[in-house]
Image (cartoon, rainbow, N blue to C red):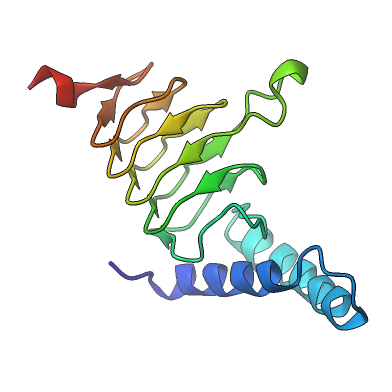
Length: 156
C-alpha cells in the first residue's frame, strides 16, 4: 500500500521534523523551527491533522484520506500501520492517566473514525473497524468492531 500525494506531504513533513526534534545544534534547532512552520500551515492548517514528530512513531505509516487524524505525541506506532480519516489515538486525558498512550504494533489497519484511547496495546496485524472505540488491549490478529470494541475474530 502506498500513500497518496496528500499523505506523502504529511509524512514528508513528519519525517523532516523527526530528524530534527530534540537535537541541540543550531542547524537542528533552525530546521525544527522550519518543521513547526510547515506543520502548522500544511498538516494542521490544511489537513486538520496532528501527527507529532515523535521518536515513537515509525517512518513507515500509511495514511488514507489524511483529514482529521489526531495522534498523541506519546503514542507508539509500529511499521506499516494504516490510518484512515478522522482517527483519534491518544491518552484518556485524566491526570492519573496522562502519559499512558496506546501502543499500536506493526501491520495494524485502523478504519475511518476509530478512537483508540488509553494505555493499551493493539497486537500485530489486527484490524480496527470504522468508528470502533477501543479502550482495552487486544492480542495480535484481532478484528475489533463496535462501541466498545470487541474482538470478532474470537467469534468465528
